View: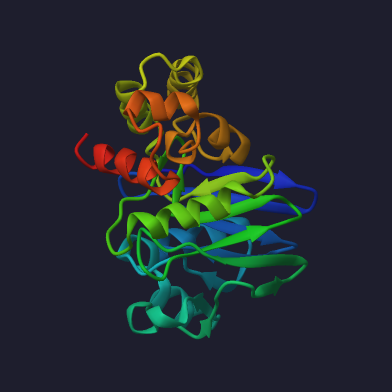
Length: 263
C-alpha cells in the first residue's frame, strides 16, 4: 500500500507531511535533495520516504521527548550518521542526542535558517522550530488548530507564556503541528462557545476538508489568533462566556485547558 504524503512548497523548499500511527504527522523539511526530519516517531516510514524521494537525511529536529516523536531517532541517526537536535535538559530522554538547542539559537540547515523557541507546557523542555523564509512553524504538541497540548509536565502559566510567544509570530505563518486533532478540538470549542460564528464556519470547512483530503494541517497562525479559544484569553466574548471578565489572562487560559481535559 502506498504511503499518503502531503507536500507543501515555497520556492525551492518543501515540507513533506507524513501520517503515522493513529493521528501523528512526521515531517521532512527539504532543500535541494537534502532533508531534515522533525519528530520522526517512526524511523522506517521516514526512511522509505527518503528513498522514494531520493533524499539524503542531514539531521533530526526533536521538539520533545515523547516516544511518538523520537521513536525513529536511533534507527535514522545510525543509518544516516546525522546529528540530532533537542533541548539540552532532555539529553537523557532523547535517543541519539548530539546537539543542544535553546531559545535564541538559529540553526543553518542548508539554505534554511531555523530559529529555536522555548515553549514549555506540554513538557518542561519542549521547543519549537520557526522559519522566517518561508514562514513555517513546527510546534510539536504545543499548538493545534483550535487547541493546544495537554499539560503533562508544565504549568498553565508556562503554557500560556509559550502560546503568547507563538501568538506574536506573523499571521501568515503556516503551523505544522504533530497531531490531527482539529475536529475534536472544534467540537469542544463549540460546546463551550456555541454562539461563536467563526467556530461554526470552521467546523463545516474542516469537516469537509477532512472528508476530501483526510488532513486539516497546516493551519495559519492568523486563523488560530482569530478562532482558537486557547489563544483568545483577552477576547471579551470568551471571558464573558466563562464568567471571568476580571480574571488574569493566564487564568482564562487555565480554565479553558481544564475544561478541555474533562471533555
